[in-house]
Image (cartoon, rainbow, N blue to C red; front, side, top):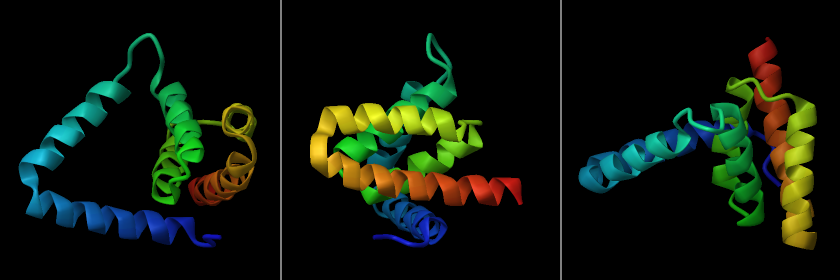
Length: 117
């Protein structure tokens, strides 16, 4: 299990920068899609990040968990909101989602603690 979610998020940011340099058009399009999908609409940005966190658990993507746990914390998600989100991802993904939900909770706790410091 990943212990340092902040380090993973930092490495992920560096890796994405490298992708942007090597495939600028693809990454520009991906970033535009992410901005459009995450834009304020009928759902607020925090709710959208909680959905993204749930999907990250369901598809078992540690890097996605790091990215979206951090974003959920930055957008003001509470531990209770994260717990309900993870409960839904466990319901939808069964046993493997239980394991990845524990990863997501650990990631959120680290990022939320950093925000409080």
